[in-house]
Amino acid sequence: MDIKINISELIKNEGTMQGRGSSGGGASVTSLNLVYSENNGKRLKFSNGLYEMLGNPEKVQFLSDANGGNIIVGTTLEENGKNFYFSTPDTHIIYNSGLVKDIIDKFKLEFGESKKTGRKSVSKSFSDIEFDTYNGNPIAIIKIR
Image 1 (tube, rainbow, N blue to C red):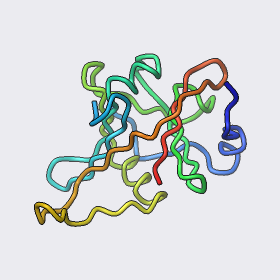
Image 2: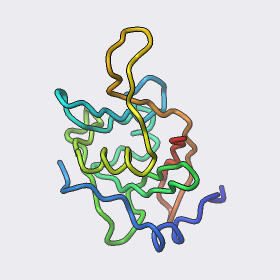
Image 3: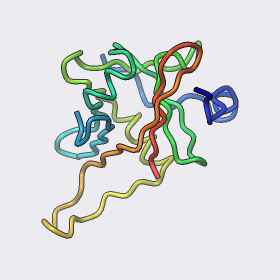
Image 4: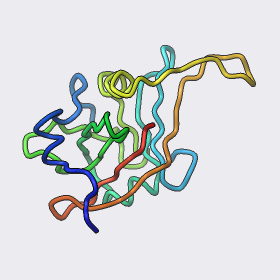
C-alpha cells in the first residue's frame, strides 16, 4: 500500500507531537478515544483493534498533520522522536496531559455541553482510521476533522 501522506516531509516541517514527559477500546473496533477531564485526567485510549493493528506495542510516537486533519501513530515515525508508553498492556491507555493538550490545540477541538445531558463533554472518539506501513512498521492515520 502506498502512503498517501509524506511522513518524512511532516517530520521535517512539524516534528513529532510532544507533550511533557512520557508515562509508562473505544466505541468501535478501531478507534482512538481522547479524554480531557479536569477531575478524571487526560488520556488517550486505544481500542483493542487499533492497538492490535499497530502490533501490540509498548510505546508509540505521534505525528501531526493538522492541515490534513490527521494524526499519524506508529512505533518508529522518527529515529529520535518522542515515545509515549502505554500505562499497562491490558488497558491500551497513554496518560499524558501534554500530549492531549497538544492534540486539542493543534486540531482546535472543543468540548461543549451535551444537548442530551447538559453536562460538559469530556471525551471524543475518532474511528475514521486507515492503516499503512512506514519503514516496514504498521502506522495508523487517524482522521481528526
